[in-house]
Length: 336
Length: 247
Image: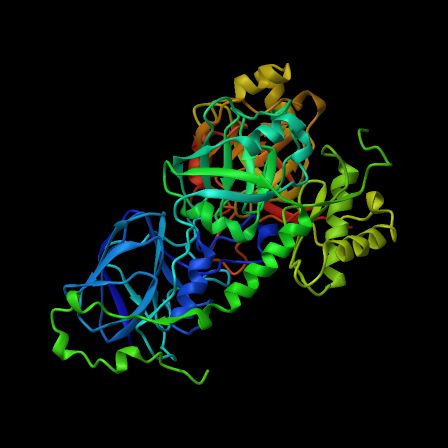
């Protein structure tokens, strides 16, 4: 059986997938990858199902090896990855040979990098998913010495690349008004939309804290608001006026009022904004939001057709003569 | 009652992928009853495109795929369903249970009892009597796995949350605010005041049924000593017992 051994691990590395659906009534949020788009990109690169579990690396990667040759893909926040003395292109698929040490460093930009394996991580599942959900006490962070089973790889082909988008450096986040937005005065809503926030260093899979340059956004009587259901993307204003964008591992009910909700298609950008990165929020109508989601769903569905062969730079190839230059250019399953 | 009949029930967007049916602006017994019954009714409809239905204190959330069914269409189906019954008088869910949960009130184990009693205008003895005699209903499960919001407490307990968060309360902590109790299933920061401590494990991921409590169940927190509670820690239910409530 194929397995992956972890020789060293950053502080917040975990197995993730698209999370658990249908457990809100049991108090469990969806969880799953902080950057869901990265899951779909990895699945496209390996031409496999996006349901297969992957390894999420927050801020920092680790060192890995596999016991049999294994297809891998690297997505999300670009990190320096080296195997066998060669630097591996990010947002691309590669073949990792048995016994070769793959070393992944810190983020060059962004916050969450992903290591995908052909066949996926075949780890323990709880409540219908393999996703580690730390705030619910499901699973654990990965650590040096852990060995993870890898599922059978039904696919083939490596050496493909997806163009990287610009979601790793902050920017403008589209939001819609939600059922508590009216608790905030129109002036406060306008001030919120005009503010340039910094992503605070305090951010994790539960929420991302935002620092406004001046004054918070407390609504009147915030301490007596009826506790209401929360979904990832809600922007909660805590008692001291600090906004938090609630992320995949958020609580399911909360008493702090929410000024708006991030569009699902913009949540990866929030997740990936690095500490100190700048974020702004723009209200869009519900109709506009649905149209943007429709466009994103189409783009996500089309990812495989965006794959390009990974062209190796001869200057970085120490063993040029050992390469089979033709097979490196073939996508793998052109007939799909 | 604060519920103005003209304003509720109300259907409102919750983000891009949700609709919230709200039955009241504050917690109320009829509003909670309506939410529990309406949730069951929406589940029974099994509408295409609806991915999840859950109830909170006095509301029901539908999470759906807006690329599959539009907000307008789902909204009008909800409005039609709302008109079919008197939801505020609906029966409570079947199969409810009554739980008795051993609890240490105050002491080092629950250090904010005095402060909470003072906020409620009660002596510590009165506060313990009031909290331990109340038979409260699980209004919803949420925040953390298997974690109940319980109510409603007598009016004296209409105290606000703290303006600053308590850094951390342990698993099994019983906390109070706004005429409700929350019994924590995880260790977490909170704005509610820590008045009691139990040994019940509300979420048991390895068990066949990982969640102990269900919305509609009733709970009483009877007083025990720190020593007795320590002995009950071997039991995953922390000494709690339950019986069925006959309809």
